[in-house]
Length: 57
Image 1 (cartoon, rainbow, N blue to C red):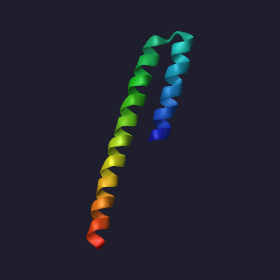
Image 2 (image 1 turned 120 degrees about the vertical axis):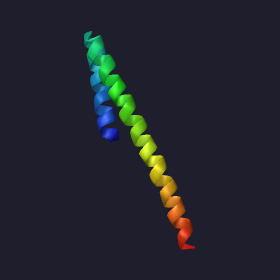
Image 3 (image 1 turned 90 degrees about the horizontal axis):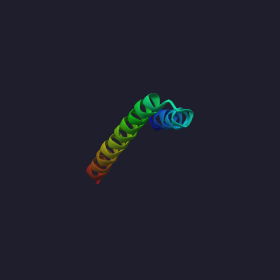
Image 4 (image 1 turned 135 degrees about the horizontal axis):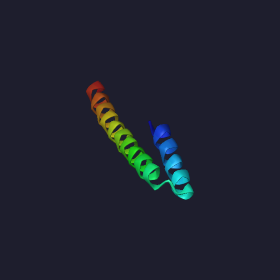
């Protein structure tokens, strides 16, 4: 998911440099959403791993 966020970010930068501001804004929003979604999933799995680790002891 982070790979897709990076791809959309690069597309956003290239589109902005070429003057396609609408496309740049849209791909920037998509990249931001994917990044925060990946961050949220990471935090959820981190908490689940910590809880599962405590259950073993």
